[in-house]
Length: 202
Image (cartoon, rainbow, N blue to C red; front, side, top):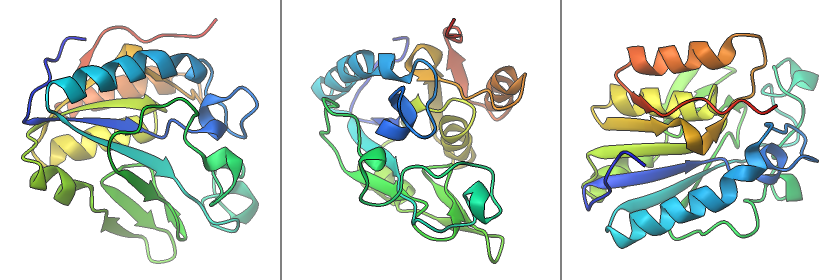
């Protein structure tokens, strides 16, 4: 880990849920199951240093324009109050959980959602939480690197935080060839410090 945690730091753990991190999940991200132990160790490090912790959780209704069956991009996943939406068992949860996408929304960033019927961007309470804890620097980890991790990191940089994404603590969907590299470049272009190397499951 290249970033030293401290009281002005926050660790954001993004969508470490069954449907993403379990090989049997509805929207499995290859290699996601291997993040649990390293991220737990990172949580312990952050907690010991007095950093704030917050977890995001995809939390979708059964019918939403986010899903392909209703005009969106994705298979049905992380439906409210289903096992697929649960955080991974064994994940150390020592901070609040921010649920996103519970309306007719694309909820990629922890900081904002896109209300699809109106095409309106709506802020979440994440920025307020970070401000209340005096956070100035963020480390963003979890799933997936080319979607929710990327959008959360870019939004954080836009809001003036010093944001780091250590690549060893994320994995990528790679919905289309080249998405992984494009996501890394987009984060760097937005001012995010991207460290380490992409882990590409064999």
